[in-house]
Length: 129
Image (cartoon, rainbow, N blue to C red; front, side, top):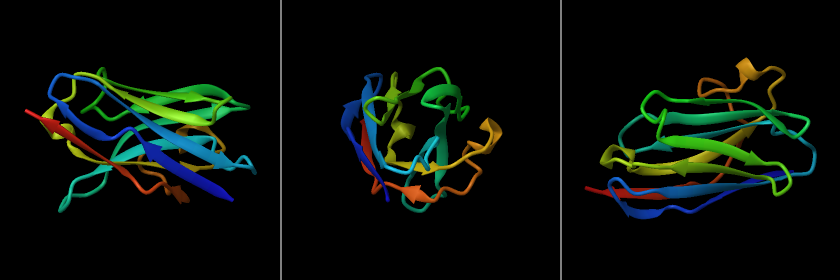
């Protein structure tokens, strides 16, 4: 049984920071790859960041060009939480953010273009300009 639950969304002013959390319940170890996606109504879902781990250690993290340098994805293996630190947010970051998990045999299989088996419900983020 795998369960993902996001938290931390809210409303912030442009230029400020927000931290999203994805709490992972995975008793079978089926989610060594966690990604954050975002979606605005009427638009396609967009991959934001992904993180690949092996034996609990972070091996690689990747970011969409739109957020590189502003967002940071980290994984706390002990707490089973993947965080998305969002700094210098912009109005275009407004969206519902969801975390998703999958098993990846290699780090190149952990990215926004892959199929994710497990999804959270999403948490809304609004950036006020």
